[in-house]
Amino acid sequence: MNKTDRLLNKDKLKIIAEQLRKPEGDLAIDVAKKMNSGNRLINLSTIEALEVKPHDRLLEIGMGNGFFVKDIFALNNSLHYCGCDYAEIMVDESLKNNEQLVKAGQAEFHVASADALPFADHIFDKVFSVNTVYFWEDPEKVLAEIHRVLSQQGKLVLALRPKASMEKYPFVKYGFDTFTKNDLTGLLSENRFSVMNYWEKEEPEQDIAGKKMKVETLIVSAKKQP
Ligand SMILES: C[S@@+](CC[C@H](N)C(=O)[O-])C[C@H]1O[C@@H](n2cnc3c(N)ncnc32)[C@H](O)[C@@H]1O
Image (cartoon, rainbow, N blue to C red; front, side):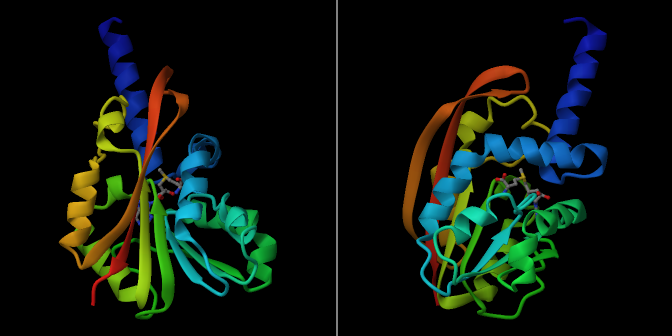
């Protein structure tokens, strides 16, 4: 690869990284659709880890275009789902993709950042987030917000691609924080959560930035300490 190609490649990787962090502008809708296929298994496994019960009140942080909300309601139709994302275009897409659930008052979507959740204290039974922890600028502040909005018996489920595989993806050097299982469980215990369970899974390889690469999933569930 010559110098010009290297520069072009670097620009492309930076754009991918920025779009994954916060999908915006002309590329956003397409990027979100690509995430739906690449992140299908991690999202479905996370929904399973939630162990939803009838009438659970759920909050998802960073739902992208809200494509998997239907899969939560397929498990139980009595839930209430609330999604928030700091990318306005993702909230718009989520509203379109879940029009019936929104009309029926079963789902709602808000533009909001994980570190300033616009919700009252103790109103959610479960909070979850898939592939967003890499972008939290102040993880302690985010976890304090999640702790605040969770009910006393509330549960948090975080899902991500673990550090070992993330570090091989060429765009990750442009603004991602990566976590091992111990990094994540340590962060949770230091911020008033007790780790309950974790799942480590290997997924089929995916084409990532033009190369076939290993894909892994790490899901950690934790309950709120008083
Ligand atoms: C990589 S995408 C993942 C989307 C979806 N959860 C999935 O797994 O396919 C990250 C999403 O989280 C949102 N996001 C990232 N950091 C956030 C934060 N601090 N607060 C709210 N939303 C955030 C982004 O706007 C984007 O929609």
